Length: 64
Image (cartoon, rainbow, N blue to C red; front, side):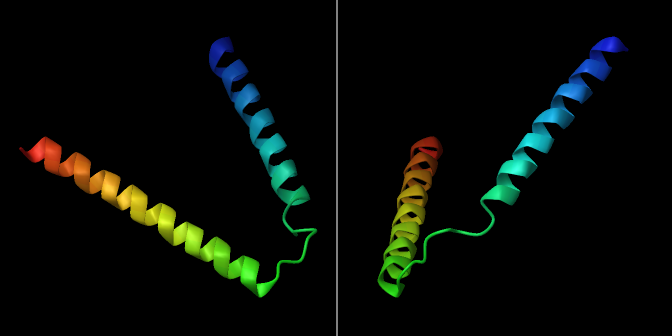
């Protein structure tokens, strides 16, 4: 029972730390220009496309 309690205590402590970090960085300090927002959006789509292609390649290799 002590092992379960120590694991639960450790996990709850880490969750509290993550929540504190998320609260600290909830509002960005820098203001992004529209060009930066578009560039980040394009990079996000590019990354999703690459992940999709990687998944497609994996699927075609497994099916063969």
